Image 1: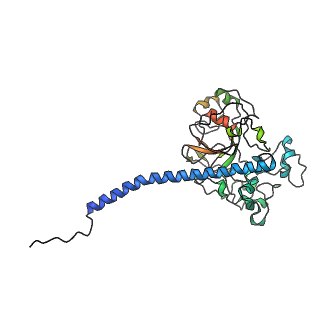
Image 2: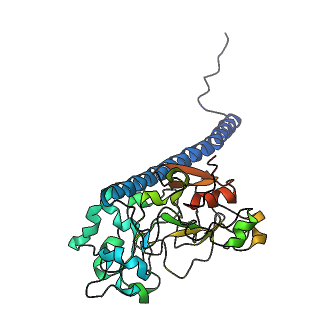
Length: 338
């Protein structure tokens, strides 16, 4: 009579190790794919945010006949007559300090269906007082999802607030990752080193200007060729080339703040502002320095909004020449968008 051994009910140690090894390999293959999907989703969400801002600016232009100021702060005498909406009560409107300081992001809130923020806690936001005035602090401390890129590793709240002597203490301002592009590099030596004559200060302005309402016809290079908004993420934290630095000691990046505009000068290889002809051949264009330049937390480039409201992804490989031409609204040179 032949006896049969009972059926085996468990894995051997070797079989278990093999299964664990297979699972580990599968997880190793899956994680990069998951990370790529998350990065792609964050980039698309960021692009959608910027699209909303571009549409809001054009809706404002359709109502007012011109695009809003990128910021209002210390206007020149020639700019004062058009800024009466921001003139402080009880002033003559003849001195720079007679005008309240503001950012375009506060101005367009009603156009992104966030007008209720301007009445936060039942207190009406007052454009005739500075953005950090007591009446305006509840609104300026409200996070606006449309102003935030999901790829940015920051909670978008400045806590504690820096410069308490200037802006008051005891409140927490909220930030934005999107800024107006005010101008290209305005140093003649840089343009000469790029092989082009400097077109002049008015020509290198961006679509939106500080202390000015911009008519669309002022963008003579074409709205589809000129940058209007761009990412400048994680401010007031300081970042260079993907690494966090010692943070700045001044406040910037708050969405209501009047000093949010960025001037796209380009960066020297070490990360500072591009100002010398000798630095042009080794310049860095994108994601080099988030303090005043285009900077994102996306791989290989950054999202921008053109003057026509369309959104593009600029790659880090963009040439300095093309970037400068895209930031200038009236330089007269052709732009290669590819």
